[in-house]
Amino acid sequence: MTSSHKPSTDGVCIEEVQTVFPARNTTDEMYLAFTSSLQRIRDADNGVLLLATCSDSSSLHPEVLKRFEENIPLELPTLPHRLALLHYLTSSSHPTPLNLHPIAERSQAFRLADLAELCDSALRHAFSRQGDGYGSSVTLVQEDFDAAFGAVEIKASEGGRYEGAKVEVVRWADVGGHAKAKTLLKESVVWSFKNIDAFKRLGIAPSKGVLLHGPPGTGKTLLAKAVATESGANFMPISIPELIKGEVGESEKAITRTFTLARRTSPTIIFIDELEALFSRHENMGDAGKKLFSMLVVEIDALEAGSGVVLLCATNYPGLVEKALLRPGRIDRLISIPPPTHRDRLSILQTLTKRLTLAPDVDLAVLARRMKGATGADLKEVVRRASLAAIAREGFQNKPVVQMADFQAKEVRAYGGGGVAS
Ligand code: ATP
Image 1 (spheres, protein in one colour):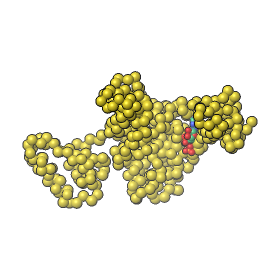
Image 2: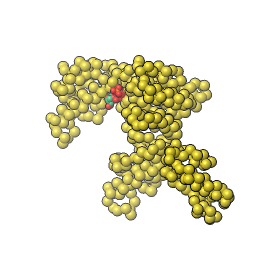
Image 3: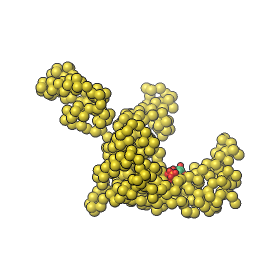
Image 4: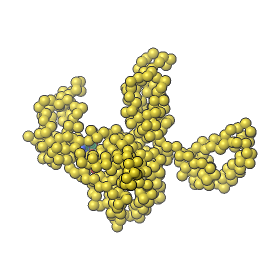
């Protein structure tokens, strides 16, 4: 800070200021030293700018935070920003027909530093693939980015981004069946991100919360990921075990942090799976559960309609969820995800087998009919086992051809309610 008195200095930057003045444990001496240094900078009136960086402003001593006139949250780049940044970061390579859009989608929740690391890693891969040394020009291809995604470990920093940020890209086409649920999700979530101006013009408030309910394995989580991909939103799953571990009061803070971060990084979908496990009927909640519940309600109520944040939840037991959560203005859109019908099962089997080579004798409609009662998860397992049976027969050498008999192997028959037996 002493250097700030020299008239030639334009600015002073304190990086990670919260490590010097943490929210807890900042001594009076440290605080006084800081405020008097700040006062000296002001008194000197020589145009010196004091700048500080902090990964999470709530971890900074509140009195120190107050001393800064501006508090500028830096947001995670959205899909269009990521695309523009990727174009910029790859501009030194040869212009190529490589479509950067899928890469921007896949790099959901990457910070600028992560994107830079991703592009560096892709460039390094491209140079070693070309084998002409680093001095030559390079052409980036998809394979370079595929390798880079495997190599770049995105870092989670307290409050700066969320954990579990790497989310699978799931398209509507990857979810078999559920035509009605997909339409309802488009209307209740995708529209609220993409057509917010139209909602405002018509004076209609989009839902802040949506609940997917249905038996286990019917594809609720898969649908939630598809909604995030198709709406270009960030996907922020809240893990219940993560939420309930830790010190007293930490869970409430985690809820607040999640919503704060979701608002900053909007459009964002906050996803809570097994909602009833944490927010069952009020009389069954423990004291800790009640506090957490109150905090969640406060956060949902504070969300402005059309803020670009939607709370998407899933449960197998909608009747057990605390009713106060399901009131209008909170989680007020309930979407049923029932066990698949015959037509759904056929569509799911077509989706799950689209990358396999099927022998001409494989009749998916027959399999769908025989597997009455099977969920999407059951069908996935049946397809997996049939593929393994084909590999066991043909080996790994060529792409194995899956035959109808593979779907009828003994262990396969155990799945799908009525079984696959002919
Ligand atoms: P739970 O209630 O137990 O959490 P869920 O309803 O969330 O289950 P998912 O986890 O989404 O079910 O699905 C389990 C697996 O089954 C997923 O890996 C998914 O790939 C597959 N699956 C389920 N439904 C479908 C579907 N309709 N189309 C394609 N795959 C599906």
